[in-house]
Length: 278
Image (tube, rainbow, N blue to C red; front, side, top):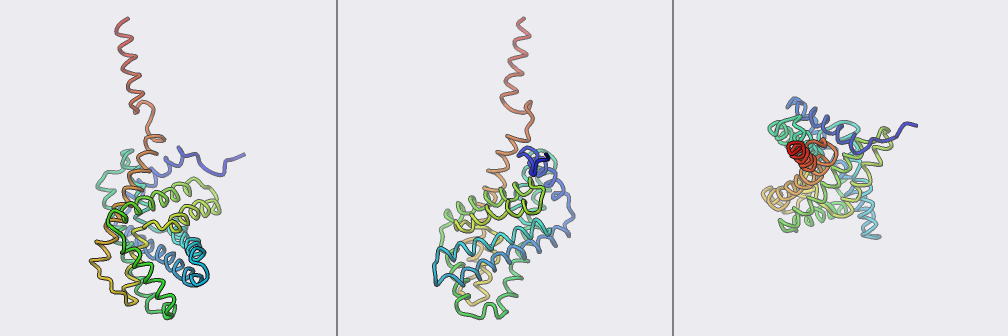
């Protein structure tokens, strides 16, 4: 019977190939798909706010869970419908470590996609702020409260929260690559993303929607504050968690050939020494 999912080693191979494709994609395509990525994640953030605002008066914990349950739709749209997301693309360091793409190609992708994500998320926030959806006081208060909480952290708090957030995001991206069926991909995405939102971790692209939305709704938030108090530390944290911690461990375990490992090299040296002394 055929397995319904790939092994971790095969997932690593798939992501190295995906990293190569992303690293060699034309800039215009990356920008357009990046705009869609920011838009899709923003839609997940919008669903989070709406679900939260409807239940907050009944039970804050249940409201948080409801919002977390809706948010993963954003990443589902990115992966299954097709878009580019900076935080998911942090896994491209696998392709760099495997020498399939250069660091310059990696940075090109990250910069263009990050800019595209920002454009898409801010554009969605601006348009939604003009709709009747954000005409009620309850939903405006919830949107502003979410943004205020994100801006109330220290640099270190935001950075650490960003690390754990993107560990879960790239694990969702990693696991869905191993699923062969659409339903399997949805479940692989939903659980880690729901967990990061429910835990209150910080996602740089989602915050590109949450923070400008609160500003457009009248909150006293400056663009400098958006970057210095949140997006910069969260982005650094996202990179550490999603581009360094997870990919480098998985590359060492699943992508390096036995002859590339220090243990194998040591065995080779001992073998040579043994033969020389005979």
